Every structure is written in structure tokens, then in C-alpha cells.
Length: 527
Image (cartoon, rainbow, N blue to C red; front, side):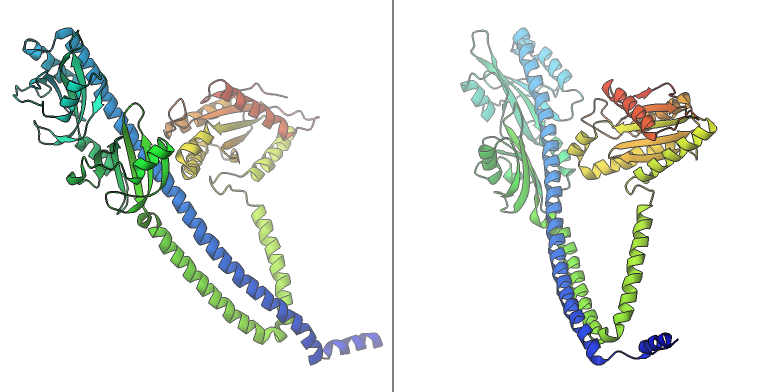
């Protein structure tokens, strides 16, 4: 009893100020250190977030300009290739029919047939050795002479038989800006017999250029190797034919090769932009697309300002709270200790709850942990009841190539779409669709035999293919999946390991991949 009373008495006696002071001093020191560390961390994180977001925006802009340059190069190549093939055909026709007034009607009919339904072709013409119009695709008899044109003079004085792309001119027949693509015609003895000409309307280039999202001050253009500007957006007739051979893009092409991306200052308007350029194969043409720094970083600057202001507000709040803490630290030591314990317990509880979360954050399907637990549970239940358990494993075909070509944002969207197709194809409530990892998915089907599993697998394969997600690196042209469907018949007197069923389904999945992809491989039930 005395001891108990003494203890009670001791608890009731308030701590002496000297003792409290000894405990307060180190707490205040550590609190001050912690405060300054938090401020440093806040500053460092703010700088890191702002800088990282800038790098991300620059990377996205680079990918955008590269995609636009690739699109422009493809369009220009296709139009020039069509013109080149047409010129070759016409020259061959002239070689067989002749190039004179007597054959003019037949040649004109041939030109009309060639240019029919090709909207990019503004006109097709044949000129004799004097430059007089012999035939044209317009079908109407016209008089005129093009001996003054640069391409006619060139072919008359050069024995080059290939196609030549000249600077844009205004068409004498329509008055519109056109891009001349021409070829020399020779007699059997090699002497000059005239010129065949295909003109491409600049309006056809304008349609694709206007579809690009170049922001407020972005630009896109294509030019000849010698620096002659063919077309530029925004369109200005005064710059057509301008010499930009000394411009940054042409210099980069000559110094670094046919494909590149870099910050450069434009010769036309002196605006610094992030340019991506590509030189066409087979043709002396270079295309480029550029986004200005102002357009690239406008949104980043706005968000960065918000982040900085939020950080300043957080810093001010920290200072206010720190001062309040210093005033009340003596009387709140015990409360803070209790709060720390409660906070630690709450953090552990939250961490445990988070660890038990069963949903995959990207696709909304069950995650890997839920899959493992469910499969083990279903196999144990099937062992007791003797029912079959089927497992479908599937993998997105050529997903890495998809990510490389279209980017990780498109890759995530692709996985979400595939997950949706999988979920829609699994009809029973007791079945479980899960993301197994990366681009691989799985479906657990308790009480389902091999035939049922194959039917569901085929439905999933068809549903994914019906999404029609473009995939240039796939032989099918769209995103597809390969599947393996395995069925296990548990034996009651022998424990069943889930890895056995997973290995079998995985092996069947790789069988589908090795035999062509976009297909289902199934196995007979294993005991």
C-alpha cells in the first residue's frame, strides 16, 4: 500500500520547470531543424516539379513535331510519287505513239484518263520541242507556249531523263499556284523532243497543312534541297519561291543528316521554334514542322506559376504553424506524443488497407494480388467439389512497338480499351478478369470446362480486334491479342498448385504467339 500511494503521489506532482526546460530545448532544436528541412524540401520539390514538367512538355512537343513532319513527308512523297509514275507512263506512251499534232488527240485522251479522280493533280501537259502545247488533261483545245518556263529551258539544255521538281509557278491555264514536276522527251537519236509536265496544286498541300495544330505562332513548310521554298503555313504568296538555303533547317539538314529535331530560329520571321524536319527519299525535297517556345510553354508557365504560388502559400503556412508550435510546445508535448502514436497507427492501418486494395489503378480490373488470392481460393474449392477450373492468359501483340510508335499515353489508353473488351466478354459474376502484369491479362473461370474457356477466349479475341485500334507495326494493322486457355481438373487426394495452371495457360499463350498471333490456343483438361 505505501508503494502505491507513493506512486500516486509522484504522478500527481507537476514536473518542475527546470526539468521541462531540459526536455524543451532539444525538442525546439529538432523542431527548428525539421522546419528548415521542410522548407528546403518544399523549395527543392517545387523546383524539381517545375523543371520536370518543363522537360515533359518539351518531350511532348518534340514527339508532336516529329509526328507532324512524318505526316507531311508521307503526304508529299505520295503526291510526288504519283506525279513521277504518271510522267514515266506518259513518256513511254509518247515513245510508242509519237509526239506531234497527228497523235495529239490520242495523247490528250490518255492524259485525261491518267489524271481522272486524282484531286491532287492540277493538270497534265505535253509540249513539243518548241514549247507549244500539244496535249493537256483539261480536254479543251488551248493555244500556248511554255518555252519561257524554267523547267522547259532546263530539259532542253540537259539530257537528264528523270523527273525534275521546279519552283512553284502560277498556272497559265488556271491562274492557281502549282508545283511543276516535269520530264524530258527524247527522239530515238537522243535529241530533244519536248517536255511532259504534271502540276500539283498547292491547294492540295494546304489542306493537310491546315489540319495541323501548330498553335498561334507555329509553322510548317516544305522546300527543295537548294532552298527554294515551295509552301509554308501560314500561307503567304510573297514567300513562295523564296531562297531559305541559309536558314537553320537547311543548314541542320546539310550538317546532321536527313532527319532531325532541334530548337532553331526561322529565316522568314526570326521566331525561335522547336523544328522537326525530314528529307524525302528519292526526291530533293525537305519538309519541316515547328512549334514556337511561346506555344510550347504557355500552359507550362501558367501551371508553374500556380505551383510556385501554392508553394509560397504552403511556406507561409509552415512559418505560421511553426511559430504557433514554438509558443505551445511546452504544454503540448504529451498531446503530440499521443498524436504521433495515433498517427503511426493510422498510417499503418491506411497502409494495410492500401495493400489490400484489389483493383488495378489503370484498367479497373482486379490486380495481381487479387488474382493470386482468387486463383488459390478457387483451386481449393474446386478440389473439394471436383469441378473444373479454367484460366485464360492473354497478351497484347507487339505492345512495345505500339508504345514506341504512339507514345505511353496512347499505350495506357490501349490497355484500358483492351481491359474493357475483356471485361465485357466475361459474362458470369463468378469469373474474374485481372491485369496480370504489363500488357498481360488473365481470366479465372471456376466451374468452366475447356470448351467454355475456348468460347470466352475467342469472344475476347474478337472483341479486341473489333476495337479497331490502329497499330502500324502489326500485320493486321490494328491492335490484337494472343490467348491461351488452360483447364485443370483437380484431384481430391493431391494438393493442386496454382502455378501449374498458370504455366500451362502461359505456354498456350506463347503457342498462339509463335503460330501467328491474334489467335487462341487451348489445352485438354489436366488432372
